[in-house]
Length: 253
Image 1 (cartoon, helix red, strand yellow):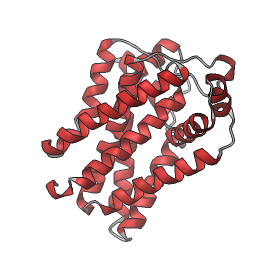
Image 2 (cartoon, helix red, strand yellow; image 1 turned 120 degrees about the vertical axis):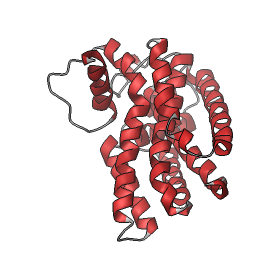
Image 3 (cartoon, one colour; image 1 turned 90 degrees about the vertical axis):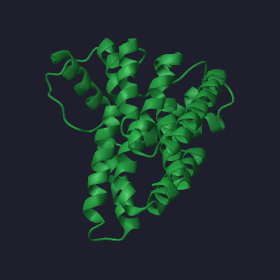
Image 4 (cartoon, rainbow, N blue to C red; image 1 turned 30 degrees about the vertical axis):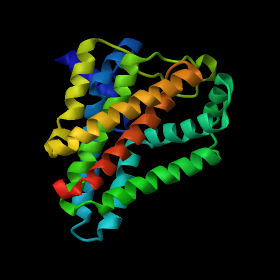
């Protein structure tokens, strides 16, 4: 039990701004194993967003409540995945070689591709959420954040880390652990999504797997594998896709 608590706290430390005990020790192996709790971190982040939305919508318009709930989740994670998405857009949009892509993603300044991509992604997320039936938004936030973090775990387990070495500006990144880690991640990622009608999930799951497969093939062709920025970008893409699927099938919910 203590081992699992340490793995969970490790995931919490790297993927959120939630304080953890200063005595928590870091090791690459522990970070790799902590990927099992990545979708669980999504449940926590989405839960905060859902709580903020539910509380604010009692007083304010739906659109403002959605906006502030999104802001709350970004603050909780320190814009961790949004930053990865912007870097991905800049790197893969402006780089034509593996080395150039890494150099651009290393740059802490955001470029044109990153700015446009980030605005487009956040706007799409906002418009999709505020168009959903009000009573489904909290559950959509919880399920979307958890499910969106499952697909990067699948990439970790089916691809290889493309080493940046001295070019890296990011924190250490979790790599493939044990098969049991993947199974637990699948559990945490799919359970909240299963609360929606099966007809919706019959669309969401295969479409998400297809997008993940195409994304993986693309980054492998360009840089030989994944990086932290690639995983952050995929998390954002799948989360937005989840909301769009819910919106397209809102007649079922």
